[in-house]
Length: 224
Ligand code: C5P
Image (cartoon, rainbow, N blue to C red; front, side, top):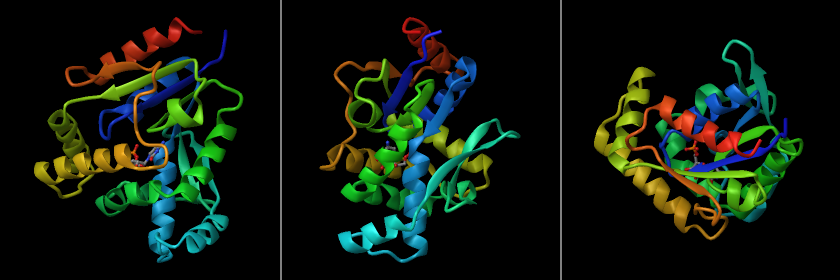
């Protein structure tokens, strides 16, 4: 079977990672959550008190960072390791979420992450989700999907996830965060979030995860 690259881009909180994970599992492909890489860099910068506005400090900080995904057989997926430490438990909270778009807008940070992502996808057979996968990381990906959904639907789903994890928040804060991140991600100078010309748009507002997965598998099977 022909191995392809599936690029899944789109707005914050529309189910990209959950969908990508299941699509990868069905196809026996590798799943890469590129948001986890930007979150891990943000975590490292905050822990080390790095001044985001100082390019020299940023470059020095990046030189000291190594990122890799390590497969967790219990969970059946790769977890992000920062300098050989599993940082998954620390990167999904509101503190990181509020700062990640600022860090992801830095040119040096993007170059650093994109090089790693391109290495990870060189043998194809990969489902990569993010914001610039179809436009910048793999502009020749065989399948590009741009996912979106109504902001309130996205926020309600995200709120439920957070509540399930025991995080305290409320709907209006989650809506504000999602809108703010979409705004920052779409208007930044470096690799802004936008639909690749040849991407298929999937609006997940009225879809269950199962339906989202099925629609992407259908598209993928036409290319494999
Ligand atoms: O996908 P997730 O919501 O975890 O991504 C967190 C943030 O990382 C995004 O809001 C965006 O600022 C950044 N990101 C990015 N490019 C990617 C993936 C994520 O700029 N390819």
